[in-house]
Image (tube, rainbow, N blue to C red; front, side, top):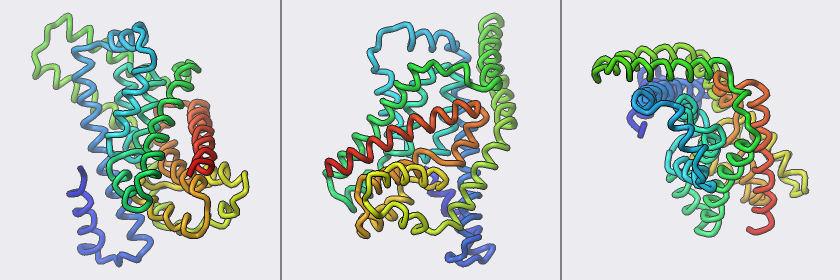
Length: 325
């Protein structure tokens, strides 16, 4: 989707500015520029699109549909499946998460998407098939989707909406006020779009600091932390290496395509496949930059709960991978 942006960033860093491809600073700058522009584009499109939806379908109607009807968990499955077909890393998934929250989608359902989206996508599936074969790929994809569903259900049952930030609650109130205005004044499409665009700019201004800060940290990690830095801590095969792998993976930041070749090296060096995949899931699905981006919509307590629940589910998955593969 963003191949054009990747090529443009490469041209800027390696040709116009003359950096070497082996330069760590160049790697960090490339990552920062590419991800900053990509995420801001996604935020703009998604927030604007959700604003259009909210102008015709109020938050309460969406929320009531998903909470009042007996869907028997289907909403979590659909959210997780939608996450599996969206080719985003954890930070790129945050704009959609913000859009879902803004649109009044129940928090547990939104979490199901947020967990699965960075773990499973067509690029990861293709690379897994080429490097590890069908069995490992099928187990990983199934586990990634189930992980999103399980985490979403658990977090949904905890009723954590009260731990969303005041900013989110103000957005909800503003969306309801806009809906009342849209309904009462019978605004034309052009007038609606003008109001929605003003709201989009307001939201972008309020989150841009968190976006830039999160991506900057991710860029430093991407450029300066060597791939083999953590292998000595998770290579023994002991029972405790799985939780250690998950904990050590959280400060890292990469998408699935970037970390899968590293996992291939881990496995070649004798690190158990479940431990390696748990490390990968932690790097891809949980990251410090993601936490900083989420800080705008979640309180610190909610971020810790989210990371704790997902991290626990990843640890269980790692043990199951070691047992079954």
